[in-house]
Length: 84
Image (cartoon, rainbow, N blue to C red):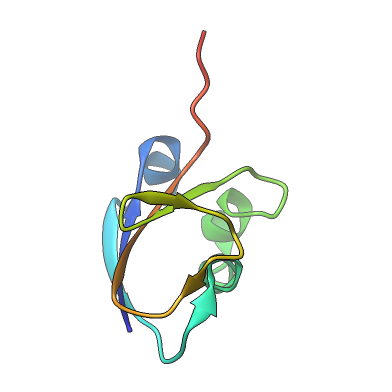
């Protein structure tokens, strides 16, 4: 399964990446994907910490963290939008 990862706004700035392609061997939940990314350590571990609020869209639709990734998809990660 091929995932096209997209990182937006603050996440893009902190991780210093806007897109990347990942190959996954098996279906997994969004939480498992984020855990794998967190496993890169350093900034990845801090920015994607379970204490941080992250929103996820798969193929441009908002999904819960329990969503199962089971095919080629675009996965976008971003922080919740706040107004002022």
